[in-house]
Length: 107
Image 1 (cartoon, helix red, strand yellow):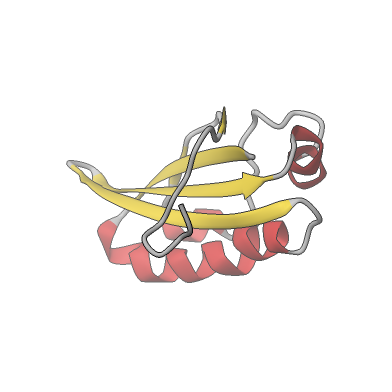
Image 2 (spheres, helix red, strand yellow; image 1 turned 30 degrees about the vertical axis):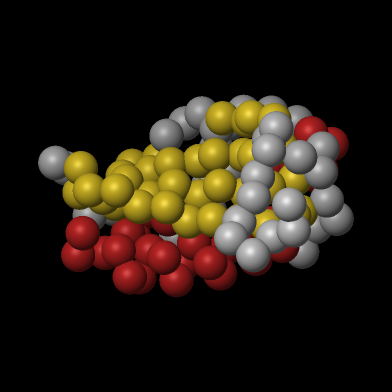
């Protein structure tokens, strides 16, 4: 499994609208593709606003390329992102998931 991590800075007063937009665009596009395994949206406070991180999980880099295109390390942005005043990280990180367990998962 591969984790794909994208982050942006978001003004606090646009948080709710941006989270809905993110769900309607990036999350739904990813969910519609073979090889998509799930996602998490993370948030942390920063002096200049909020840092929102979308982590998607994929079966392979080929599945990621089907979502991201020929340059999977480049952030995939959507029309309308600019309405929320986000500052996107231009680079996306990919990491192999070596282990994962949630409470209630079988050991």
